[in-house]
Length: 585
Ligand code: ADP
Figure 1 (cartoon, protein in one colour):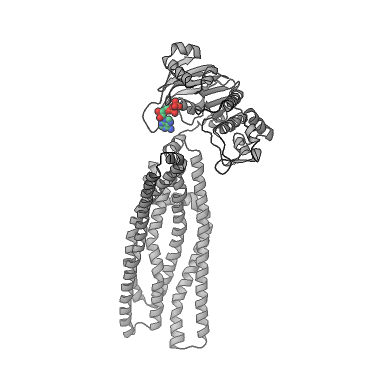
Figure 2 (cartoon, protein in one colour; figure 1 turned 90 degrees about the vertical axis):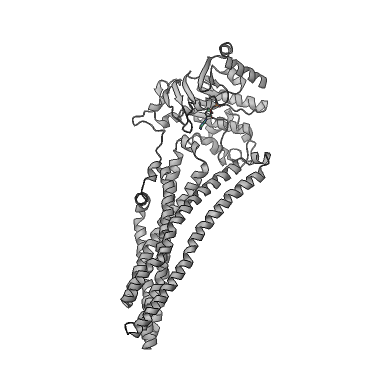
Protein backbone atom coordinates (compact mmCIF):
# COMPACT_ATOMS: atom_id res chain seq x y z
CA UNK A 1 0.00 0.00 0.00
CA UNK A 2 2.68 2.41 1.07
CA UNK A 3 4.34 2.05 -2.28
CA UNK A 4 1.61 4.20 -3.84
CA UNK A 5 2.24 7.16 -1.65
CA UNK A 6 5.70 7.29 -3.10
CA UNK A 7 4.44 6.94 -6.64
CA UNK A 8 4.66 10.24 -8.44
CA UNK A 9 1.62 11.71 -10.14
CA UNK A 10 3.29 11.05 -13.44
CA UNK A 11 3.74 7.38 -12.60
CA UNK A 12 0.09 7.07 -11.64
CA UNK A 13 -1.03 8.67 -14.89
CA UNK A 14 1.32 6.42 -16.82
CA UNK A 15 -0.05 3.40 -15.03
CA UNK A 16 -3.66 4.45 -15.77
CA UNK A 17 -2.69 4.99 -19.38
CA UNK A 18 -0.99 1.63 -19.93
CA UNK A 19 -3.51 -0.42 -17.99
CA UNK A 20 -6.77 1.23 -18.81
CA UNK A 21 -6.62 3.80 -21.57
CA UNK A 22 -4.15 2.53 -24.12
CA UNK A 23 -6.56 0.03 -25.60
CA UNK A 24 -8.99 2.83 -26.39
CA UNK A 25 -6.33 4.92 -28.09
CA UNK A 26 -8.09 4.66 -31.45
CA UNK A 27 -11.29 6.15 -30.02
CA UNK A 28 -9.32 8.85 -28.24
CA UNK A 29 -7.63 9.77 -31.51
CA UNK A 30 -11.01 10.00 -33.24
CA UNK A 31 -12.13 12.32 -30.44
CA UNK A 32 -8.97 14.36 -30.97
CA UNK A 33 -9.83 14.58 -34.66
CA UNK A 34 -13.22 16.08 -33.74
CA UNK A 35 -11.40 18.44 -31.38
CA UNK A 36 -9.36 19.62 -34.36
CA UNK A 37 -12.61 20.26 -36.27
CA UNK A 38 -13.97 22.07 -33.22
CA UNK A 39 -10.86 24.25 -33.01
CA UNK A 40 -11.06 24.96 -36.73
CA UNK A 41 -14.74 25.89 -36.69
CA UNK A 42 -14.46 28.04 -33.56
CA UNK A 43 -11.52 29.94 -35.02
CA UNK A 44 -13.26 30.40 -38.33
CA UNK A 45 -16.21 32.01 -36.55
CA UNK A 46 -13.85 34.62 -35.15
CA UNK A 47 -12.07 34.94 -38.45
CA UNK A 48 -15.32 35.40 -40.44
CA UNK A 49 -16.04 38.65 -38.62
CA UNK A 50 -13.16 40.19 -40.54
CA UNK A 51 -14.61 39.66 -44.07
CA UNK A 52 -18.12 40.20 -42.68
CA UNK A 53 -17.29 43.73 -41.52
CA UNK A 54 -14.96 44.49 -44.38
CA UNK A 55 -17.06 43.15 -47.26
CA UNK A 56 -20.57 43.66 -45.94
CA UNK A 57 -20.37 46.84 -43.89
CA UNK A 58 -17.46 48.72 -45.40
CA UNK A 59 -17.49 47.59 -49.05
CA UNK A 60 -21.19 46.59 -48.98
CA UNK A 61 -20.72 43.65 -51.37
CA UNK A 62 -23.96 42.19 -52.82
CA UNK A 63 -22.69 38.70 -53.50
CA UNK A 64 -21.01 38.03 -50.19
CA UNK A 65 -24.08 39.16 -48.23
CA UNK A 66 -25.43 35.62 -48.62
CA UNK A 67 -22.19 33.70 -48.60
CA UNK A 68 -20.67 35.00 -45.38
CA UNK A 69 -23.77 34.46 -43.19
CA UNK A 70 -24.06 30.98 -44.76
CA UNK A 71 -20.47 30.28 -43.76
CA UNK A 72 -21.19 31.48 -40.26
CA UNK A 73 -24.13 29.08 -39.98
CA UNK A 74 -21.92 26.32 -41.32
CA UNK A 75 -19.14 27.09 -38.87
CA UNK A 76 -21.52 27.04 -35.92
CA UNK A 77 -23.08 23.79 -37.12
CA UNK A 78 -19.64 22.23 -37.46
CA UNK A 79 -18.64 23.52 -34.04
CA UNK A 80 -21.71 21.99 -32.43
CA UNK A 81 -21.36 18.71 -34.22
CA UNK A 82 -17.67 18.24 -33.54
CA UNK A 83 -18.09 19.11 -29.87
CA UNK A 84 -20.90 16.56 -29.67
CA UNK A 85 -18.85 13.76 -31.20
CA UNK A 86 -15.66 14.62 -29.34
CA UNK A 87 -17.61 14.43 -26.08
CA UNK A 88 -19.69 11.35 -26.86
CA UNK A 89 -16.63 9.35 -27.84
CA UNK A 90 -14.81 10.27 -24.64
CA UNK A 91 -17.89 9.52 -22.54
CA UNK A 92 -17.94 6.05 -24.06
CA UNK A 93 -14.24 5.57 -23.42
CA UNK A 94 -14.68 6.71 -19.82
CA UNK A 95 -17.52 4.26 -19.26
CA UNK A 96 -15.47 1.41 -20.70
CA UNK A 97 -12.60 2.37 -18.42
CA UNK A 98 -14.96 2.57 -15.46
CA UNK A 99 -16.10 -0.96 -16.19
CA UNK A 100 -12.51 -2.20 -16.52
CA UNK A 101 -11.40 -0.62 -13.26
CA UNK A 102 -14.48 -1.77 -11.36
CA UNK A 103 -14.09 -5.30 -12.73
CA UNK A 104 -10.44 -5.37 -11.69
CA UNK A 105 -11.28 -4.00 -8.30
CA UNK A 106 -14.03 -6.51 -7.75
CA UNK A 107 -11.89 -9.42 -8.82
CA UNK A 108 -9.17 -8.25 -6.48
CA UNK A 109 -11.63 -7.89 -3.60
CA UNK A 110 -13.25 -11.25 -4.22
CA UNK A 111 -9.83 -12.89 -3.88
CA UNK A 112 -8.72 -10.62 -1.08
CA UNK A 113 -7.45 -12.09 2.14
CA UNK A 114 -10.02 -12.47 4.88
CA UNK A 115 -7.73 -10.35 7.05
CA UNK A 116 -8.05 -7.40 4.66
CA UNK A 117 -11.81 -7.68 4.48
CA UNK A 118 -11.96 -8.01 8.29
CA UNK A 119 -9.80 -4.95 8.71
CA UNK A 120 -11.64 -2.45 6.56
CA UNK A 121 -15.22 -1.37 6.76
CA UNK A 122 -17.20 -2.55 3.76
CA UNK A 123 -18.38 1.04 3.28
CA UNK A 124 -14.85 2.02 2.35
CA UNK A 125 -14.74 -0.47 -0.50
CA UNK A 126 -18.15 0.65 -1.72
CA UNK A 127 -16.97 4.26 -1.83
CA UNK A 128 -13.77 3.19 -3.56
CA UNK A 129 -15.74 1.30 -6.16
CA UNK A 130 -18.15 4.13 -6.85
CA UNK A 131 -16.84 7.60 -5.97
CA UNK A 132 -13.12 7.05 -6.45
CA UNK A 133 -13.61 5.29 -9.73
CA UNK A 134 -15.84 8.22 -10.75
CA UNK A 135 -12.93 10.56 -10.17
CA UNK A 136 -10.61 8.44 -12.24
CA UNK A 137 -13.04 8.32 -15.13
CA UNK A 138 -13.42 12.09 -14.74
CA UNK A 139 -9.69 12.39 -15.19
CA UNK A 140 -9.80 10.27 -18.30
CA UNK A 141 -12.90 11.69 -19.94
CA UNK A 142 -13.06 15.34 -18.93
CA UNK A 143 -9.35 15.96 -18.59
CA UNK A 144 -8.26 14.28 -21.80
CA UNK A 145 -11.17 15.77 -23.72
CA UNK A 146 -10.59 19.27 -22.40
CA UNK A 147 -6.85 19.08 -22.81
CA UNK A 148 -7.17 18.45 -26.52
CA UNK A 149 -10.26 20.43 -27.37
CA UNK A 150 -9.27 23.50 -25.39
CA UNK A 151 -5.62 23.64 -26.30
CA UNK A 152 -6.36 23.09 -29.99
CA UNK A 153 -9.12 25.70 -29.91
CA UNK A 154 -6.78 28.08 -28.14
CA UNK A 155 -4.08 27.53 -30.76
CA UNK A 156 -6.63 28.18 -33.52
CA UNK A 157 -7.90 31.35 -31.88
CA UNK A 158 -4.38 32.61 -31.20
CA UNK A 159 -3.59 32.09 -34.87
CA UNK A 160 -6.58 34.26 -35.80
CA UNK A 161 -5.52 36.87 -33.26
CA UNK A 162 -1.94 36.99 -34.58
CA UNK A 163 -3.20 37.06 -38.13
CA UNK A 164 -5.37 40.08 -37.34
CA UNK A 165 -2.84 42.01 -35.33
CA UNK A 166 0.34 40.68 -33.79
CA UNK A 167 0.96 43.64 -31.48
CA UNK A 168 -2.44 43.32 -29.80
CA UNK A 169 -1.97 39.56 -29.64
CA UNK A 170 1.32 39.88 -27.82
CA UNK A 171 -0.27 42.18 -25.28
CA UNK A 172 -3.16 39.73 -24.83
CA UNK A 173 -0.80 36.79 -24.40
CA UNK A 174 1.05 38.58 -21.67
CA UNK A 175 -2.21 39.16 -19.89
CA UNK A 176 -3.73 35.66 -20.28
CA UNK A 177 -1.58 34.02 -17.61
CA UNK A 178 -2.72 36.76 -15.25
CA UNK A 179 -6.32 35.73 -15.74
CA UNK A 180 -5.63 32.04 -15.49
CA UNK A 181 -3.42 32.44 -12.44
CA UNK A 182 -6.39 32.89 -10.15
CA UNK A 183 -8.05 29.70 -11.30
CA UNK A 184 -4.87 27.69 -11.15
CA UNK A 185 -4.09 28.52 -7.56
CA UNK A 186 -7.47 27.10 -6.63
CA UNK A 187 -6.62 23.66 -8.00
CA UNK A 188 -4.57 22.58 -5.02
CA UNK A 189 -7.14 23.71 -2.52
CA UNK A 190 -9.90 21.85 -4.30
CA UNK A 191 -7.95 18.62 -4.50
CA UNK A 192 -7.23 18.80 -0.78
CA UNK A 193 -10.83 19.43 0.15
CA UNK A 194 -12.09 16.75 -2.22
CA UNK A 195 -9.86 14.12 -0.62
CA UNK A 196 -11.43 15.01 2.70
CA UNK A 197 -14.83 14.85 1.08
CA UNK A 198 -14.18 11.32 -0.20
CA UNK A 199 -13.11 10.19 3.24
CA UNK A 200 -16.19 11.66 4.85
CA UNK A 201 -18.41 10.14 2.16
CA UNK A 202 -16.86 6.75 2.95
CA UNK A 203 -17.60 7.24 6.62
CA UNK A 204 -21.21 8.10 5.84
CA UNK A 205 -21.60 5.01 3.64
CA UNK A 206 -20.11 2.77 6.33
CA UNK A 207 -22.38 4.35 8.88
CA UNK A 208 -25.48 3.81 6.74
CA UNK A 209 -24.61 0.15 6.22
CA UNK A 210 -24.33 -0.29 9.96
CA UNK A 211 -27.62 1.44 10.63
CA UNK A 212 -29.51 -0.74 8.18
CA UNK A 213 -27.87 -3.88 9.46
CA UNK A 214 -28.56 -3.07 13.07
CA UNK A 215 -31.85 -1.25 12.82
CA UNK A 216 -33.58 -3.58 15.28
CA UNK A 217 -30.86 -3.03 17.81
CA UNK A 218 -31.22 0.70 17.35
CA UNK A 219 -34.99 0.49 17.82
CA UNK A 220 -34.90 -1.69 20.92
CA UNK A 221 -32.40 0.62 22.59
CA UNK A 222 -34.45 3.57 21.37
CA UNK A 223 -31.44 5.20 19.86
CA UNK A 224 -33.27 6.95 17.04
CA UNK A 225 -32.55 10.36 18.45
CA UNK A 226 -28.93 9.54 19.12
CA UNK A 227 -28.42 8.10 15.65
CA UNK A 228 -30.18 11.07 14.10
CA UNK A 229 -27.76 13.37 15.84
CA UNK A 230 -24.82 11.27 14.67
CA UNK A 231 -26.15 11.13 11.11
CA UNK A 232 -26.83 14.85 11.13
CA UNK A 233 -23.24 15.43 12.11
CA UNK A 234 -21.90 13.28 9.26
CA UNK A 235 -24.28 14.88 6.78
CA UNK A 236 -23.47 18.34 8.09
CA UNK A 237 -19.73 17.77 7.74
CA UNK A 238 -20.22 16.56 4.23
CA UNK A 239 -22.37 19.57 3.42
CA UNK A 240 -19.69 21.91 4.71
CA UNK A 241 -17.06 20.24 2.55
CA UNK A 242 -19.29 20.22 -0.51
CA UNK A 243 -20.01 23.89 0.03
CA UNK A 244 -16.34 24.62 0.41
CA UNK A 245 -15.48 22.85 -2.85
CA UNK A 246 -18.24 24.54 -4.78
CA UNK A 247 -17.40 27.94 -3.36
CA UNK A 248 -13.76 27.50 -4.34
CA UNK A 249 -14.91 26.57 -7.84
CA UNK A 250 -17.27 29.49 -8.16
CA UNK A 251 -14.87 31.93 -6.55
CA UNK A 252 -12.80 31.70 -9.71
CA UNK A 253 -15.62 33.29 -11.73
CA UNK A 254 -15.88 36.84 -10.36
CA UNK A 255 -12.09 37.16 -10.19
CA UNK A 256 -11.75 35.94 -13.74
CA UNK A 257 -14.57 38.16 -15.01
CA UNK A 258 -12.98 41.17 -13.43
CA UNK A 259 -9.53 40.39 -14.81
CA UNK A 260 -11.02 39.77 -18.26
CA UNK A 261 -12.82 43.10 -18.07
CA UNK A 262 -9.56 44.88 -17.29
CA UNK A 263 -7.84 43.02 -20.10
CA UNK A 264 -10.45 43.93 -22.69
CA UNK A 265 -10.52 47.53 -21.52
CA UNK A 266 -6.74 47.80 -21.90
CA UNK A 267 -6.90 46.21 -25.34
CA UNK A 268 -9.71 48.53 -26.49
CA UNK A 269 -7.70 51.47 -25.25
CA UNK A 270 -4.58 50.36 -27.12
CA UNK A 271 -6.61 49.43 -30.20
CA UNK A 272 -8.13 52.88 -30.34
CA UNK A 273 -4.61 54.32 -30.34
CA UNK A 274 -3.55 51.91 -33.09
CA UNK A 275 -6.61 52.77 -35.21
CA UNK A 276 -5.75 56.46 -34.93
CA UNK A 277 -2.19 55.66 -36.01
CA UNK A 278 -3.59 53.67 -38.95
CA UNK A 279 -1.98 50.52 -37.68
CA UNK A 280 -5.28 48.70 -37.19
CA UNK A 281 -8.44 48.36 -39.29
CA UNK A 282 -11.85 48.07 -37.64
CA UNK A 283 -12.56 44.69 -39.28
CA UNK A 284 -9.28 43.29 -37.94
CA UNK A 285 -10.05 44.62 -34.50
CA UNK A 286 -13.47 42.99 -34.27
CA UNK A 287 -12.21 39.68 -35.53
CA UNK A 288 -9.34 39.89 -33.04
CA UNK A 289 -11.71 40.79 -30.22
CA UNK A 290 -14.05 37.92 -31.08
CA UNK A 291 -11.14 35.46 -31.11
CA UNK A 292 -9.93 36.76 -27.79
CA UNK A 293 -13.33 36.48 -26.19
CA UNK A 294 -13.80 33.01 -27.55
CA UNK A 295 -10.39 32.15 -26.08
CA UNK A 296 -11.66 32.97 -22.60
CA UNK A 297 -13.48 29.64 -22.16
CA UNK A 298 -10.62 27.33 -23.22
CA UNK A 299 -8.11 29.32 -21.15
CA UNK A 300 -10.29 29.02 -18.11
CA UNK A 301 -10.97 25.38 -18.72
CA UNK A 302 -7.26 24.63 -19.15
CA UNK A 303 -6.44 26.51 -16.00
CA UNK A 304 -8.88 24.42 -13.98
CA UNK A 305 -7.92 21.18 -15.69
CA UNK A 306 -5.47 20.65 -12.89
CA UNK A 307 -8.34 20.19 -10.44
CA UNK A 308 -9.86 17.27 -12.33
CA UNK A 309 -6.42 15.76 -12.79
CA UNK A 310 -5.59 16.08 -9.08
CA UNK A 311 -8.91 14.56 -8.09
CA UNK A 312 -8.46 11.70 -10.54
CA UNK A 313 -4.98 11.01 -9.24
CA UNK A 314 -6.21 11.09 -5.66
CA UNK A 315 -8.91 8.56 -6.62
CA UNK A 316 -6.34 6.37 -8.35
CA UNK A 317 -4.13 6.49 -5.26
CA UNK A 318 -6.95 4.90 -3.32
CA UNK A 319 -8.11 2.44 -5.97
CA UNK A 320 -4.86 1.12 -7.45
CA UNK A 321 -3.53 -0.25 -4.15
CA UNK A 322 -6.68 -2.33 -3.82
CA UNK A 323 -6.23 -3.70 -7.32
CA UNK A 324 -2.54 -4.35 -6.73
CA UNK A 325 -2.81 -5.66 -3.21
CA UNK A 326 -0.72 -8.78 -3.01
CA UNK A 327 -2.48 -11.66 -1.32
CA UNK A 328 -0.90 -12.99 1.83
CA UNK A 329 -2.71 -16.28 1.37
CA UNK A 330 -0.76 -17.61 -1.57
CA UNK A 331 -0.09 -21.07 -2.83
CA UNK A 332 3.38 -22.34 -3.57
CA UNK A 333 4.51 -22.50 -7.17
CA UNK A 334 4.89 -26.24 -6.92
CA UNK A 335 1.63 -26.73 -5.01
CA UNK A 336 0.01 -30.09 -5.60
CA UNK A 337 -3.58 -31.24 -5.49
CA UNK A 338 -4.53 -32.34 -2.03
CA UNK A 339 -5.46 -35.99 -2.11
CA UNK A 340 -7.55 -37.29 0.71
CA UNK A 341 -7.70 -40.99 1.44
CA UNK A 342 -8.68 -41.03 5.09
CA UNK A 343 -9.19 -37.40 6.07
CA UNK A 344 -7.10 -37.21 9.21
CA UNK A 345 -6.25 -33.65 10.24
CA UNK A 346 -3.35 -32.70 12.47
CA UNK A 347 -2.31 -29.38 13.95
CA UNK A 348 1.37 -29.27 14.83
CA UNK A 349 2.47 -26.54 17.21
CA UNK A 350 0.19 -24.02 15.56
CA UNK A 351 0.62 -20.45 16.66
CA UNK A 352 -1.52 -17.66 15.33
CA UNK A 353 -2.29 -14.02 15.87
CA UNK A 354 -4.56 -11.66 13.99
CA UNK A 355 -2.91 -8.82 12.11
CA UNK A 356 -4.73 -6.21 14.10
CA UNK A 357 -3.42 -7.10 17.50
CA UNK A 358 -0.35 -8.62 18.96
CA UNK A 359 -1.94 -11.18 21.22
CA UNK A 360 -1.14 -14.77 20.49
CA UNK A 361 -4.65 -16.13 19.84
CA UNK A 362 -3.51 -19.71 19.38
CA UNK A 363 -0.49 -20.83 21.34
CA UNK A 364 1.17 -24.05 20.25
CA UNK A 365 -1.96 -25.93 19.40
CA UNK A 366 -1.56 -29.65 18.73
CA UNK A 367 -4.57 -31.52 17.48
CA UNK A 368 -5.06 -34.93 16.10
CA UNK A 369 -8.45 -35.11 14.43
CA UNK A 370 -9.27 -38.70 13.57
CA UNK A 371 -10.49 -39.48 10.07
CA UNK A 372 -14.15 -40.10 9.46
CA UNK A 373 -15.17 -39.25 13.00
CA UNK A 374 -16.62 -36.35 14.86
CA UNK A 375 -14.36 -34.22 16.99
CA UNK A 376 -15.80 -31.53 19.20
CA UNK A 377 -14.07 -28.34 20.25
CA UNK A 378 -15.40 -27.04 23.50
CA UNK A 379 -14.43 -24.06 25.57
CA UNK A 380 -15.55 -20.64 26.59
CA UNK A 381 -16.34 -18.00 24.10
CA UNK A 382 -13.20 -16.29 22.87
CA UNK A 383 -11.09 -19.38 23.55
CA UNK A 384 -10.04 -19.64 19.90
CA UNK A 385 -12.33 -22.36 18.54
CA UNK A 386 -13.54 -20.47 15.46
CA UNK A 387 -10.00 -19.38 14.77
CA UNK A 388 -8.92 -23.04 14.70
CA UNK A 389 -11.71 -23.81 12.26
CA UNK A 390 -10.83 -20.87 10.05
CA UNK A 391 -7.24 -21.99 9.69
CA UNK A 392 -8.18 -25.26 7.99
CA UNK A 393 -9.57 -23.80 4.73
CA UNK A 394 -6.78 -21.18 4.90
CA UNK A 395 -9.02 -18.19 5.56
CA UNK A 396 -6.01 -17.25 7.66
CA UNK A 397 -2.55 -18.73 7.65
CA UNK A 398 -0.75 -19.96 10.74
CA UNK A 399 2.00 -17.82 12.21
CA UNK A 400 4.12 -20.89 12.77
CA UNK A 401 3.58 -24.61 12.91
CA UNK A 402 1.78 -26.71 10.38
CA UNK A 403 -1.61 -28.17 9.56
CA UNK A 404 -1.69 -31.49 7.78
CA UNK A 405 -4.40 -33.47 6.13
CA UNK A 406 -3.49 -37.11 5.61
CA UNK A 407 0.09 -36.14 6.24
CA UNK A 408 0.20 -33.47 3.53
CA UNK A 409 0.77 -29.93 4.67
CA UNK A 410 -2.15 -27.76 3.57
CA UNK A 411 0.47 -25.16 2.65
CA UNK A 412 1.87 -27.47 -0.03
CA UNK A 413 -1.55 -27.98 -1.55
CA UNK A 414 -3.37 -25.97 -4.15
CA UNK A 415 -5.83 -23.75 -2.33
CA UNK A 416 -8.63 -24.72 -4.66
CA UNK A 417 -8.05 -28.42 -4.06
CA UNK A 418 -8.05 -27.82 -0.31
CA UNK A 419 -11.24 -25.78 -0.12
CA UNK A 420 -12.94 -28.13 -2.51
CA UNK A 421 -12.71 -30.86 0.12
CA UNK A 422 -14.18 -28.83 2.96
CA UNK A 423 -17.73 -27.88 3.81
CA UNK A 424 -18.47 -25.16 6.26
CA UNK A 425 -21.80 -25.12 8.04
CA UNK A 426 -21.82 -22.05 10.18
CA UNK A 427 -24.41 -20.79 12.54
CA UNK A 428 -25.04 -17.63 10.60
CA UNK A 429 -26.09 -18.95 7.25
CA UNK A 430 -26.10 -16.39 4.53
CA UNK A 431 -28.66 -16.78 1.83
CA UNK A 432 -28.54 -14.89 -1.42
CA UNK A 433 -31.38 -12.98 -3.02
CA UNK A 434 -32.24 -15.85 -5.26
CA UNK A 435 -34.40 -18.95 -5.48
CA UNK A 436 -34.13 -21.78 -2.95
CA UNK A 437 -32.80 -23.99 -5.70
CA UNK A 438 -30.01 -21.61 -6.67
CA UNK A 439 -29.15 -21.09 -3.03
CA UNK A 440 -28.61 -24.83 -2.60
CA UNK A 441 -26.86 -25.02 -6.00
CA UNK A 442 -24.32 -22.49 -4.71
CA UNK A 443 -22.50 -25.50 -3.29
CA UNK A 444 -22.22 -27.26 -6.62
CA UNK A 445 -23.58 -25.64 -9.73
CA UNK A 446 -23.28 -28.89 -11.69
CA UNK A 447 -25.68 -30.80 -9.48
CA UNK A 448 -28.68 -32.39 -11.11
CA UNK A 449 -32.24 -31.67 -10.00
CA UNK A 450 -32.38 -35.07 -8.39
CA UNK A 451 -29.27 -34.36 -6.34
CA UNK A 452 -30.78 -31.08 -5.18
CA UNK A 453 -34.01 -32.75 -4.14
CA UNK A 454 -32.08 -35.44 -2.31
CA UNK A 455 -29.93 -32.89 -0.50
CA UNK A 456 -33.12 -31.12 0.55
CA UNK A 457 -34.66 -34.39 1.61
CA UNK A 458 -31.76 -35.49 3.78
CA UNK A 459 -31.44 -32.09 5.36
CA UNK A 460 -35.18 -32.12 6.09
CA UNK A 461 -35.46 -28.89 4.15
CA UNK A 462 -37.93 -30.30 1.65
CA UNK A 463 -40.67 -30.24 4.28
CA UNK A 464 -40.87 -26.50 4.39
CA UNK A 465 -39.73 -25.93 0.81
CA UNK A 466 -42.72 -27.87 -0.49
CA UNK A 467 -45.03 -25.57 1.41
CA UNK A 468 -43.64 -22.44 -0.19
CA UNK A 469 -45.66 -20.86 -3.03
CA UNK A 470 -43.18 -21.76 -5.78
CA UNK A 471 -41.43 -24.59 -3.96
CA UNK A 472 -37.78 -24.76 -5.05
CA UNK A 473 -38.25 -21.73 -7.28
CA UNK A 474 -39.38 -19.46 -4.44
CA UNK A 475 -37.30 -16.34 -4.06
CA UNK A 476 -35.67 -15.98 -0.66
CA UNK A 477 -33.44 -13.39 0.96
CA UNK A 478 -33.91 -9.65 1.10
CA UNK A 479 -36.36 -9.50 -1.79
CA UNK A 480 -38.16 -12.75 -1.19
CA UNK A 481 -39.57 -15.03 1.46
CA UNK A 482 -37.93 -14.78 4.87
CA UNK A 483 -36.82 -18.10 6.33
CA UNK A 484 -36.60 -18.90 9.99
CA UNK A 485 -33.27 -19.62 11.68
CA UNK A 486 -33.95 -23.36 11.66
CA UNK A 487 -34.94 -23.29 7.98
CA UNK A 488 -31.80 -21.41 7.05
CA UNK A 489 -29.69 -23.95 8.89
CA UNK A 490 -31.31 -26.75 6.95
CA UNK A 491 -30.58 -24.99 3.64
CA UNK A 492 -27.01 -24.65 4.79
CA UNK A 493 -26.84 -28.37 5.59
CA UNK A 494 -28.40 -29.14 2.20
CA UNK A 495 -25.59 -27.16 0.60
CA UNK A 496 -23.01 -29.18 2.48
CA UNK A 497 -24.71 -32.46 1.56
CA UNK A 498 -24.59 -31.40 -2.07
CA UNK A 499 -20.91 -30.52 -1.85
CA UNK A 500 -20.09 -34.03 -0.61
CA UNK A 501 -16.77 -33.26 0.99
CA UNK A 502 -14.65 -35.55 3.14
CA UNK A 503 -14.15 -32.79 5.71
CA UNK A 504 -16.90 -30.92 7.46
CA UNK A 505 -16.46 -27.90 9.68
CA UNK A 506 -19.47 -27.23 11.78
CA UNK A 507 -20.14 -24.22 13.90
CA UNK A 508 -23.12 -25.34 15.86
CA UNK A 509 -25.85 -22.78 16.38
CA UNK A 510 -26.08 -21.39 19.86
CA UNK A 511 -29.66 -20.28 19.44
CA UNK A 512 -32.12 -22.82 20.63
CA UNK A 513 -34.75 -24.20 18.32
CA UNK A 514 -38.00 -25.97 19.05
CA UNK A 515 -37.61 -29.64 19.91
CA UNK A 516 -38.97 -30.87 16.59
CA UNK A 517 -36.70 -28.66 14.47
CA UNK A 518 -33.81 -29.40 16.75
CA UNK A 519 -34.15 -33.13 16.31
CA UNK A 520 -34.53 -32.78 12.56
CA UNK A 521 -31.41 -30.67 12.32
CA UNK A 522 -29.63 -33.20 14.48
CA UNK A 523 -30.66 -35.97 12.14
CA UNK A 524 -29.66 -33.94 9.11
CA UNK A 525 -26.25 -33.34 10.66
CA UNK A 526 -25.90 -36.99 11.48
CA UNK A 527 -26.59 -37.83 7.86
CA UNK A 528 -24.19 -35.15 6.63
CA UNK A 529 -21.30 -36.06 8.90
CA UNK A 530 -21.54 -39.83 8.81
CA UNK A 531 -18.17 -41.32 7.94
CA UNK A 532 -16.63 -37.88 7.31
CA UNK A 533 -14.03 -36.06 9.29
CA UNK A 534 -16.03 -33.52 11.22
CA UNK A 535 -14.87 -30.80 13.54
CA UNK A 536 -17.67 -29.20 15.43
CA UNK A 537 -17.66 -26.17 17.66
CA UNK A 538 -20.08 -27.76 20.02
CA UNK A 539 -22.60 -25.86 22.05
CA UNK A 540 -25.13 -28.60 22.69
CA UNK A 541 -24.67 -31.30 25.22
CA UNK A 542 -26.00 -33.95 22.86
CA UNK A 543 -23.36 -33.07 20.28
CA UNK A 544 -20.59 -33.21 22.83
CA UNK A 545 -21.76 -36.56 24.10
CA UNK A 546 -22.07 -37.93 20.56
CA UNK A 547 -18.55 -36.88 19.58
CA UNK A 548 -15.82 -39.44 19.19
CA UNK A 549 -13.25 -37.09 20.61
CA UNK A 550 -13.31 -33.82 22.48
CA UNK A 551 -10.71 -31.08 22.69
CA UNK A 552 -11.03 -28.54 25.44
CA UNK A 553 -9.69 -25.19 24.35
CA UNK A 554 -8.89 -22.43 26.77
CA UNK A 555 -7.14 -19.14 26.02
CA UNK A 556 -5.68 -20.44 22.79
CA UNK A 557 -4.34 -23.65 24.27
CA UNK A 558 -5.46 -27.25 24.36
CA UNK A 559 -6.18 -27.98 28.00
CA UNK A 560 -7.85 -31.34 27.68
CA UNK A 561 -8.41 -34.10 25.21
CA UNK A 562 -10.27 -37.38 25.16
CA UNK A 563 -13.73 -38.76 25.55
CA UNK A 564 -16.40 -37.29 27.71
CA UNK A 565 -15.93 -39.67 30.65
CA UNK A 566 -12.17 -39.30 30.66
CA UNK A 567 -12.37 -35.53 30.53
CA UNK A 568 -14.87 -35.35 33.34
CA UNK A 569 -12.28 -36.78 35.66
CA UNK A 570 -9.14 -35.30 34.11
CA UNK A 571 -10.12 -31.71 33.24
CA UNK A 572 -11.57 -29.24 35.70
CA UNK A 573 -12.31 -26.76 32.95
CA UNK A 574 -14.25 -29.42 31.07
CA UNK A 575 -16.12 -30.48 34.18
CA UNK A 576 -17.02 -26.90 34.85
CA UNK A 577 -18.12 -26.40 31.26
CA UNK A 578 -20.17 -29.61 31.31
CA UNK A 579 -21.95 -28.69 34.50
CA UNK A 580 -22.89 -25.33 33.06
CA UNK A 581 -24.28 -27.04 29.95
CA UNK A 582 -26.36 -29.39 32.09
CA UNK A 583 -27.81 -26.46 33.93
CA UNK A 584 -28.66 -24.75 30.67
CA UNK A 585 -30.40 -27.74 29.15
P1 ADP B 1 -14.29 -18.77 19.99
O1 ADP B 1 -14.69 -19.31 18.68
O2 ADP B 1 -13.68 -19.80 20.89
O3 ADP B 1 -15.37 -18.02 20.67
P2 ADP B 1 -12.59 -17.03 18.44
O4 ADP B 1 -11.69 -17.94 17.71
O5 ADP B 1 -13.75 -16.46 17.71
O6 ADP B 1 -13.10 -17.75 19.77
O7 ADP B 1 -11.75 -15.82 19.04
C1 ADP B 1 -10.55 -15.97 19.71
C2 ADP B 1 -9.95 -14.61 19.95
O8 ADP B 1 -9.60 -14.02 18.72
C3 ADP B 1 -10.90 -13.65 20.63
O9 ADP B 1 -10.14 -12.94 21.58
C4 ADP B 1 -11.35 -12.73 19.54
O10 ADP B 1 -11.54 -11.44 20.05
C5 ADP B 1 -10.19 -12.75 18.57
N1 ADP B 1 -10.64 -12.60 17.17
C6 ADP B 1 -11.54 -13.39 16.55
N2 ADP B 1 -11.68 -13.01 15.26
C7 ADP B 1 -10.87 -11.95 15.06
C8 ADP B 1 -10.55 -11.12 13.94
N3 ADP B 1 -11.10 -11.30 12.75
N4 ADP B 1 -9.64 -10.14 14.13
C9 ADP B 1 -9.06 -9.96 15.33
N5 ADP B 1 -9.30 -10.70 16.42
C10 ADP B 1 -10.19 -11.71 16.31
